Length: 343
Image 1 (cartoon, helix red, strand yellow):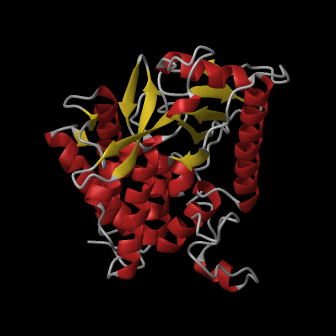
Image 2: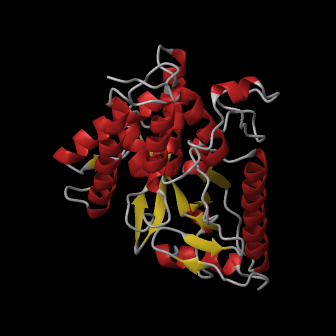
């Protein structure tokens, strides 16, 4: 059985085609910060209190955001308000819908954006001309006593017509904590983050986007079924996909990582579609096992899997040796807002 090492090609693909560049990261931060300024200015205009805190969440904060050929980027920026600040002029608590409408009105206060913010079920969405959007989930900060009589904070999301206990920051802590644990042990946490992003990239081709499952479902699946292979992201990816496929063939039910609820139920159509895509990819990857598989054929297989020509366009080893360009790290992309790795 053949075993062509395509780790260098996968590393380059991750760096050039998957991870956001430093320029793209800077654009994300500016978009996020501009959205926060717009929200607070709009709240001031309407004489409403600011949120106690605004916290980035989702793929941006977990550092699993991937490049999108149509620049359809989704930035989640949760607004956490004190409960006493989410009241109307008579001091009556706002309904979940009214709370989201207040944030919507604040985001569109100056009328400068062509597309006005709109209220969605779990957030307020502001579309921008460049193709990206910012989702602003609205939370209220609640207090309750624990079993020892101590006051503790918890958070309720304005979801539909209900306030639902939720805190996306806990999901971020769950994922980043696992990465840290792996980095401290025998497995490579950075590899798990790369495998997460490579899997999201695989699922996000243009003709699949509206049919496949969510980023958090993919992240949970990778975490639960991650197979670490030292210095071989190509093998790690394939083995992780095999494990995910076996799980989805049994059931598409996925547990929420921090809440007593499900991200997806049995017979979820989006996860079935994702599983079908994985099955096709794994079938294509069987070509790597052929005894006559060489590097050129292996690259062609990975091109088929990712619907690209990137792998076959990579220079051969002899060409690299004649080049002054040297790849010094698997993860060259870094965030500039705290020093952590982005890739």
